[in-house]
Length: 355
Image (cartoon, rainbow, N blue to C red):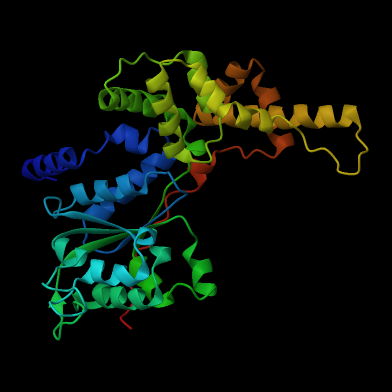
């Protein structure tokens, strides 16, 4: 990327308020794989599918790809598919001509047209009605679409980025998502890791959120104590980054770290309770031994994640020998290398034929 292109990308990134790269991707191997995939996606005008749990930052990644591309100075147009009823979504996407239906007193361009030489971001693509899926398929095949009530097709150049927290292959088997559309949007696929696989990035995320929420809420903000940061790193984050941001916002409003512990203590407490038989027969020694074993396994796994799977550093942090750590990892079935080192972001680069 030349100087002019870098300047344009920087200006576009500032315009949409993207976080710094270290906040978006972190410093772990899984985040680095996502960054490389996103940078590659930005160099070509092909559909991109972003998959990941709710709250992992799919829209932020879509904006990153947009800003890095040669169309970064164009519009970034978001469509939240489940938020717009199916009867209205078609007109929102493709627009309509004057007189197309009752109340259409003038022609209106759809969001597809507004995204010309820019990016159309379809959030929760799995929620699209079958009829709209068919029109979207035509757009992806030949770059053409037709406004409601119009007689002629229109031509656009647009990058389509889709996001979903579902497994679209399962939706295809269930008959709710078109297989041919899946082939069209699945040219490049990026899988975002959940926050529990990014524990080492939590301090960076927290500092960024503290600064941003402090400015937004006009509140003085104190950095979190090391104890609270460790507490956040030990939590499993089912709501991912969105849940973390909510917790940080509560802290900024109250100014009291006790709010953080109160928000998350139920999750910590539930993790420490071993399974108890439902027949009423409880062997206290067995249950206690089971709970200790489960807690030890989780502590080892999370400490490995915190130290990016450096086993010698992990052993020192846990206060045990390197040989003891290896023994406990084998006993617990913990792999010798982290999942982030084994599983990279999935990239599909196969172009499927039309039809």
